[in-house]
Image 1 (cartoon, rainbow, N blue to C red):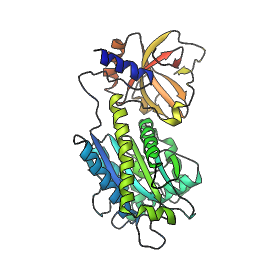
Image 2: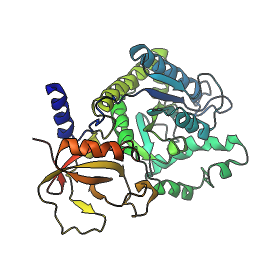
Image 3: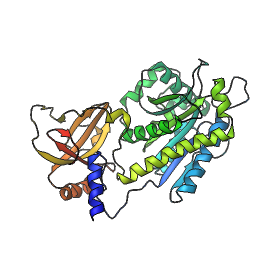
Image 4: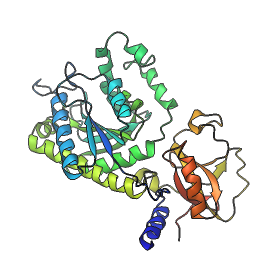
Length: 369
């Protein structure tokens, strides 16, 4: 009992979620690994035409899957492809959604006009105005033209070669963005140890393969096939194994954080350095301060302020939100005891499966003393 109470205190202290259903352990049970491109789509190709992205990423993906299976037999590993076949972008996310995966990892190799461009980077779904990120988006999304003449209809009018098309991604609300960023940060932390030395960081971009996934999802770029130094590393099997091991270590750390925290909010560098701002209620009456301390339930975090009738709120009328960094974090309820909040959490999770408990004191999230 004492250990359980200590875990609860630890979770609140670091703003991690609590699993209110004590008889049901939250676990990361299934991961979908997506080797980019394949078949008639070679992906990026080296300058000497001898090496193709599709072969490199398939090798790394299979290595990663084996590492996960060997260390976590209880985790099911699903590949969008395990051979050299062509899989449309929408089918990749469809596989992940149909399998009800807990995590989606898409693995790619980068290319750029500037031959000096080098390093690893990990993308999450979002809109970034950086021209380099737009170049990556256009490169990875261009595969849809191989899917036939109806690709514009299938992807709701999206054209990978028209920059204005990418405004569609600014309208998306991603309830899993926190988790995606957390895992992406862990991936970059591990990849920064080599064999590709340059760490280009975690970024957001409008990537179709991540667009319709209904779970935390990242796209990992292992290096630049257009850079001679990166290429020499990428084609060696021992280095492919090292990159698979790096992503696996990130997966292990994420799995532990996810399960210890009950599947809810996770800490990661871009947000933890931000100072919590005041909570604002749905009527925006910022002068009405909540006094004292209470427990609330966070239901989602998004990068754009929601309208009261937003479908993301699923009809919920009583809620507050606060802004931390790039996120608007929405929560509901004011509870004075942990047991009362836990009972309410069970009901809230029927509509918001990712909901978790937070502590609020004088309109800010504070550690539990």
